[in-house]
View (cartoon, rainbow, N blue to C red):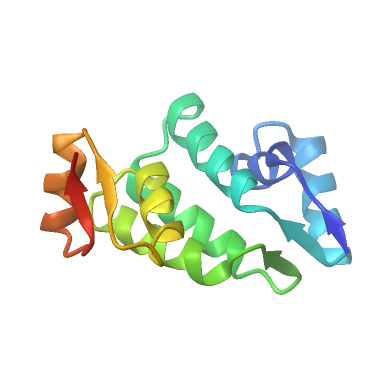
Length: 129
């Protein structure tokens, strides 16, 4: 199994460099690959902030990537839940933070917008500090 970096996923999903996109596809199709949570987080940020993907397009792209046969996510259930929360309107990073903390009594933040968005999306266990 090979661990891959954000730029491999970004090349695959954006195809902004044809040669690297082809190499990324071959790498992922020919090898079992491991993707850490932080790589998924960074990939979401790059797609949204650098490439201008809409939040909905980011969720679709990350789900498609995660569903590839030889891709293993570090925490697939956590990433899936965070993507679902992002689909419901939360920022992916915030959704990932909250999902990773689901075992705690609450996720506390000073971000009133996050509290409102999470509650509106039906996410339990978030409190304003």
